[in-house]
Amino acid sequence: MTERQVSAGGEGAGAPDVQVQERRLRRDLGFWGLTGIGFSNIVGSGWLFAAMYAAQTAGPAALLSWVGAGVLCALVALVMIELGATRPEGGGTVRWPLFASGRLVGTLIGWSTLLSVGGTAAEISAIMQYAAHYLPGIYNGHTLTLSGLALATGLSVLLTVLNWFAVRMFAKLNNLVSIFKIVVPVVTVIALIASGWHSGRLTDHGGFAPYGYVACLTALAGGGIVYSVNGFQAPLDFSGETRNPRRTIPGAVLSGIGLAVLMYLALQLAFLFTVPENLLVHGWQGVSFDSPFGQLALILNLHWLSSLLYADAVVSPGGSAYVGVAIDARHTYALAKNGTIPRYFMKVNQRFGIPRRALAINLVVIVVFLLPFGGWQDIVSVMGDMYLLIYAASAVAVAVFRAEPGGRTAGWVPGLSWIAPVSFVVSSEFVYWSGWQDLRLALPLVLGGLLIFLAMRRPGARADLDAEGDGAGPRRPLGAELRTGAWLVVYLVALTLLSWLGTFEGSGRLPAPYDSLTVAALALAVFFWAVRSGVRHLQAPRPAATA
Image (tube, rainbow, N blue to C red; front, side, top):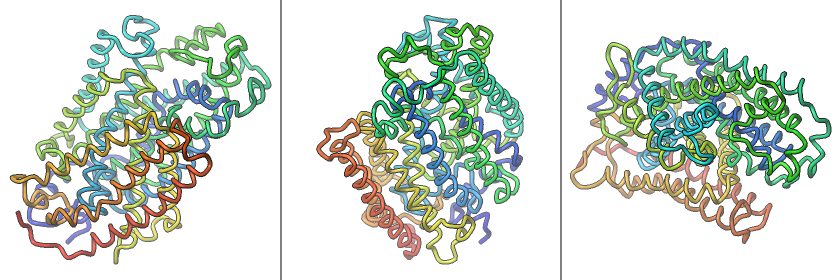
């Protein structure tokens, strides 16, 4: 069996169907194309809003939150670089948990990934909030109006159409957008600091951490920081369309993270030091704008900058949404390969190498997410948790593959034996720190994937998913699948319970810092349980396909 077959999950009788679709993907992306995809996906609506929401949550100490988010991204990136460089495949972040931990975990993480399509809805919502400066009737201060929803739907359709053609054209257009997305934030930082600098901001108005250092942790998800820095994994989802992925992926991912974190730190400093004194009468929590940097520029009489920012408010989130639509299509394509959604959506257009049916279903999901939420912060608070669960599952997957006899991932990234568990623990803490108000919605939503898993096992369902080429081997008894994937269900339930008991918007029955220490202990125990289960899953004799 060739490496290409293994990489594509091409074991078993029906594998050629998956291989045919995988081979239709065009390997046209190089280092600069991947770096542009990663950077553009990171720097989207986050730079327009997160500095204000982070300051409201943590005050000047939000700077520490950005550094913490960068550390998380670096740890998780090393895990995912190993997977993307050694197991390149379209929609890899959806496929790796399936291979490593079986169909229950693969279904739950796949479902979480499908829900994370809502992140693209956040970018479109950000465009609408800034566009309300010119079209007041589209946003009412909390959610999109009916006319705003219609405009947002039209924009979603446009982005889908732009992704309808070859990946090479997509990369070239994205590179042009990325240049604009670098220039405007840099100009914004320089102009604001030159026009409205107020000294002492790191210590005035309650001090450096006016709401306590615990608020730095809450700001990671609730303030939109994790969401804003998220996106670095984008090049990995294009690993199946990359020339020489082992050489180009590591540099592209790390370059995107480094540039983005530096930019966000500069923007946070500019916001902290230029907000007028009269707006801080009630502290940082009292600072509120519908379009933070645009309105701040107007207050400082920088009308030219305000015009530039309102233009970029379309370009930056639009660029990220453009990339997001492309990534979501690769995720949905991979979900179809997994059998989580119908195989109909696996088809790749033979002429252009694009999974067009996946693009179409994602358009529907994006519009659905715009309906109940409509506001940027409401969407990203939940989406941040979805992304972190995907990262945690990837940390387990890389450890399982390393422990597998003859595993192809061993040694590519030095130190993975400690990086993987630390990455899992940090991801778990970040999920917990997002707070009960977000987790009480996010984690039950993910657990809803159990219904999909059970539906796939119902009488009359396909008896052998491997006949469809999902790569997880012949269908095993329900009990075996539950034993292999039980760690994820226990992990999600335990996190939800600890969130309710803890001090991050919870009941406070488990005081700080014992709540965070308990989460760390839980995460370590679950990580090693998950790895052992995954190794047994890979080493178990594969039964013949049965009904």
